Length: 439
Image (cartoon, rainbow, N blue to C red; front, side, top):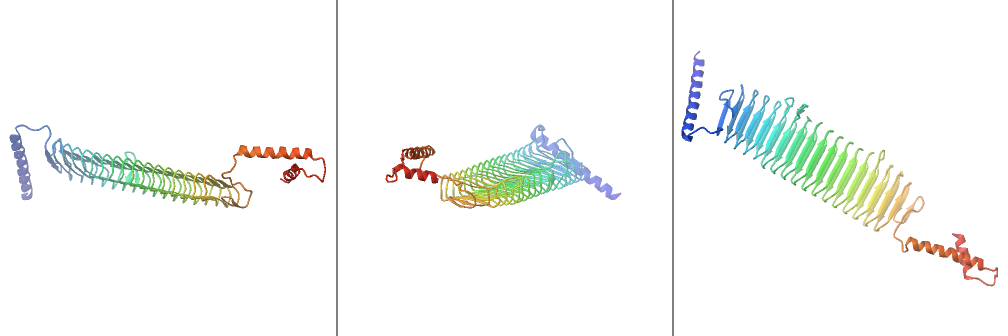
């Protein structure tokens, strides 16, 4: 009885103090503003249009037009700044918005939404979600969100640190992380499945995405206007490091790796397959693609404008490499155990396969065509196994060679017709006729 009376007395004093404070503020300002400059609601007490709470939740707002609402048990909402807004809709949630026009919405069990920066929003959604967090720290006009409106999500994290106009999203699945560090107007997204990661570090106007699959990691580090994408598959990796306007993609498969390491305007990809590798190191305008099979590899090491096509459906252990060369076209496969290479030269066309065990290469030459389809070796004009099919630059044009061949035939025929059978006389055309016969 005594305790209840004391509680009522304290409550009455608090209510009277709040009323007096409001009255004095109204007198000082002359008239009540359209929206309160600050408000607070604790455990359902002090609810207003700008601040409201329920049992065991709190809501506090500071700033002109700021609002805070907590509509579930053990929720907390804090808004600071002009027109800042924070709200929670499920139990054990926390929403914090700090900055003019900032917005934070936390939903799902143990959902956390943090927005520190002006004119941006951080959101965790879906009542079926658990331990999802969306966080923005610094920068303006960034949008960060986790969760999915239709499917349950668990331990998804979306984070943006600094930069402006970025969109970072972790949608669906379990333990997916999307992160952007700095830069402007980047889009970083994970969509569904399990333990996928999408990361952008610095640079602007990049798109980094993982969609489906398990344990995949797509990342861009330094560079602008890059597109790094992983679609499906398991334990795949796609990476761009230092370079702009690159497209780095892996689709399906298991344990595949795609990398652009320093260079611009490159297209590097793998499609299906197991433990495939496609790499560009130091070069621009290169294309490297690996398709299907097991352990197929394409590597461009230093060079521009090269095209590497490796593997194929059912192809295994095909390897292709360009080293210090430009504008080469290289293919290895389809087939098994084939190797093609170009080194220290340009504008060569090299193809190894279907094999198996076909090796074709060009080294220290320009403008060659080297092909090996069956088991054996073809390097420049050197050959082991099979007929010679290596082509290169000729001193005579094909038309001139044809004319030479034709003139030789006519000369031989004329000489033969003119030979009267005199053995003591040796016409000049007779020896030419004998050479033609041998060929």
